[in-house]
Image 1: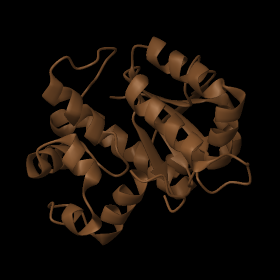
Image 2: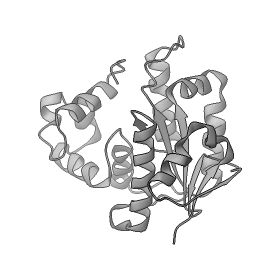
Image 3: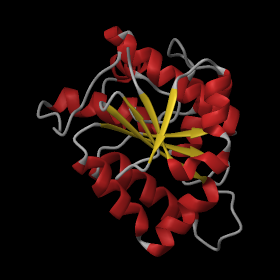
Image 4: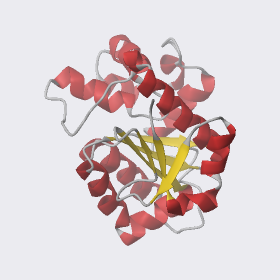
Length: 211
């Protein structure tokens, strides 16, 4: 039986209560790192889009990344809402740079959610993948040394892309460079990428606010 632990400070977000409505057993305590912990194996940091940008400005973002890595658990960061659409005067390039740094330098996948409800569903999905690990790839404190594995690690950390889709994308395009340079029509040729996801990926690589 897995254990889901939520940081005490998350109670005001309402997410722990929403998880309980889905019959998830949630224990509350103060966590050293992250906001949600699954069986001491997966650590999840949740940020609103506004707080994500604030943490870029303050420099707190990478301090939190260091704590997630230090935990030796599989890390995940969920950003609620588009970090490109906040009231802060931060350029898209700065936001993009921070996202890439978290994904590549710290090797912490970043997933965006559209709402608290969406965040709850992402956490539930993480629990299900932990319980049924056939499609869950663990990266515990080690960077992949093989170049193909490094490419797969990078692609699967893109918005809306999991391990299986990442494998299909790399097989279709042959390299990360071809993938990054692909247009929407080319992206949609990959099984599992519809119009919306193709546009999202295309915009992600081009520093647009329509993320």
